[in-house]
Length: 429
Ligand code: AMP
Ligand code: GLY
Image (tube, rainbow, N blue to C red; front, side, top):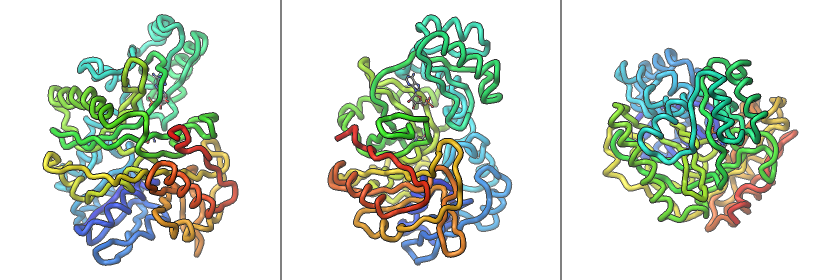
């Protein structure tokens, strides 16, 4: 099979690495990829994965490339091409592609859509209101005592969520999004949720339109600094499994969320084939969904795929063709920890082009895989090329062992200004 993976981050490196192990794959490309992806080799024939310089949002060019190379399966990593309808375009042109279609991508691209869907189909969520005018939005914040979360409806690079402690902050947030248009058209409508307290976990389920197969739990660390301080980021590290949900509690949460979700999709004629990634707050009153993503998490994917035993090509094929019910997901009993090494200054501004050393030494450690995110090849060097640079991932017999292994690998790697959290998975230990 010829496979094309779309995207350039740590999630896509993990997807490429796992897909490359499949005996079905004879050739693989990644658009646009990164320096680590370009070093991956296929298990079947030792061929290198080829990076092609086409952006993840250039749907026309990607489609022409897939037609020209007679790609058998395209795998989409990021949310933007999904929201732009890449799956619909490919399918219309007779190309097989894995990921959600544009209608299904609304679960991520519109928070108003998701909130209304959750309420209509009885999925546990925060009490909330949706608004397209500032006045009623502010009045609703007041009914929550001002302690609330104001969310821009559309995609806002993960920045459109403002947490407010009182009515003054809430009114400022509404003005910023709806009047000041801080996130452009993404803020034409807002969702306002009550502020929920609890432990936040990531849930993933692979769906094929009828069946949803839930993954084990994982937990991200969104803040830039140790102790959950500092600015929100795309994610500074993950681990799986989390001790905050037992297997039985995970199964119960999955039932509470996925059953009404699939029922709702059927009723609304949404053919959901891809990953559903709900953000879940474990509150005293039970699990509540904060938001839906319609793609794999980053860096959740790094810990999931290092634990997954199945052939990923077979699972994604089954997700496209609606035959997931025949598959059982199998996971290594080992724990996995991923520590993100970022550029100094991230999530603010940062420099690029810093030479990275120690990658081979880190990768040589047992059970360790260094996934690249923002990296590029520069002559013989691999250099930094983004905010999140590497996802240093290690397996261990338990979380503590995995954590020690991941940090032992981090110690081997150097680049100017490297910044990482030292407490990934610490909450769980
Ligand atoms: P979202 O993009 O909707 O997941 O929001 C980004 C982050 O804001 C989440 O990962 C949570 O940490 C936080 N958050 C979102 N909604 C709520 C809520 N209702 N209560 C408390 N925290 C929230
Ligand atoms: N790690 C969080 C996300 O991918 O949205």
